[in-house]
Image 1 (cartoon, rainbow, N blue to C red):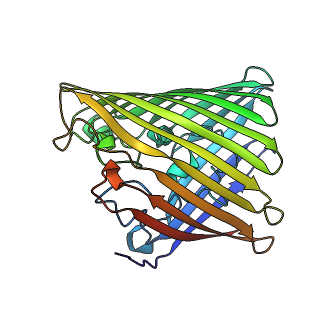
Image 2: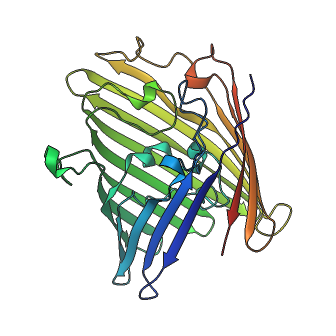
Length: 329
């Protein structure tokens, strides 16, 4: 069955600098778009850019400030989430990168949300480190605050020995009072059990550009979750990426992403929807092509194909076609 959806989504990002070395970013959004029409079945194939605001009102979706401390360090403060490096400068750009949430970066990065701060430090010219703490629940009336509610703490290392090679390691420790949501992958992989969930997530990423016109990349992510009073669970995801910059003209970009969105691979001590793991394996296959119409407008059509949605071969394949238009002023 084919469904055609016509919806609108507008995001306005404003950037400013107070000293010339710092960066203040304010994002506003408005729209009636949904991430995916199949959210009741699976979270695979969700788009990475739609905005859904109440009555199409304009809402704040980004507020962050980054400033340098000395020659090697910087501090990032945000009310809307972390600034973890996705280790792929071509896919993670919401203006002309991948069109899906999964294709933009390792899903474990979505576990760092809302209010917090991050410290970035260049250990050497090739090696950098980041440490951060973010809390997504601050409610003085209920007794939860910056250090007593849901939170994520993370460490990240980036190694760039040359201009064409980039390697990254990520560790994220999370606490959530009811789930472990990445907003991608199968429904079971979100570990929605209405009990406190402690997660330890590990990611490894790589990016290699053998020439100016070809770049290869990918990542692997693993989360070991402990549901308090029940048991443990494991969630895995991975992806391989191919990008061809300037294919067809300057600032054009063809991208392909093939991988597995988060999949519950096993539990001990409990089941989710009467299963200890997702029954099968699905693939996320995505292709997009970004091209500038003018100096200020870029258009990106893209196609996402999800096989065996929700990691269940009994579900029919899902195809999502979208066109993103970006305006720069």
